[in-house]
Image (tube, rainbow, N blue to C red; front, side, top):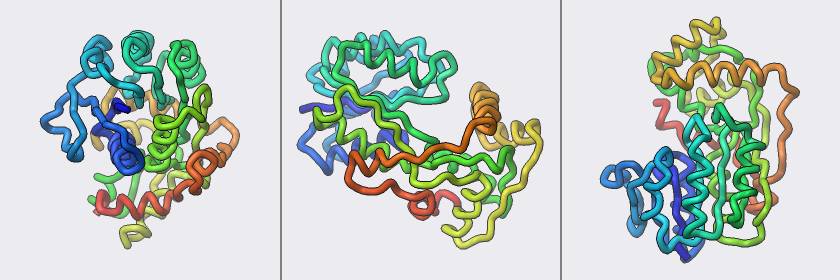
Length: 274
């Protein structure tokens, strides 16, 4: 069996690759724009392609059985064409959807996957814990994180848990036609996330609430793409009006192990903030 992993150099993609290598006899092929700089484990074949150019995937897919498809683009315009290319070669797709796609809701993304003609599994995640790395520069520079919507609660999800569920779906037919709604085990505000990171690195950190314009400028200073800043702030503003997020048991149901806490995530990534 050969599995193709998109987003191979990202936080989730690297975890999927590592866990596939540990858990199965699957040969792993990894999509990246720059194979020479990918830094992937021995035995992984890095192949050049770009999801924004669907036909670039054609050569990568020859001989592939299953595909981990993480959608990294802020538009879903290319998604139907990408699925058509995958269908020419593979029979199974595990799709990690994104709430950051401007023109397709998560439900619409899942509908496209379900209608693709492929054996499919959809992974619908809560907020990625790794998003907290956005604060790394501020934390390395001082003891204050400046932002907006500090009381916004999120069920922060460790990327290793996303990958563990994806690997189960990639290597087993048991998850065909299913959508797994993954969350972390607790709902934690942004301000509380900062405090927990401080405990992980042994420094007292705190959140400073600022105006949206000031938060926007801080995000730009921290390196956020301009095209993403307002999308994220608008999303957070909407989330503030929603009911408190629900926590699911999906990670444990699929993998047999409870979802990792944000405290565990912070300990695993402490070096990034020091």
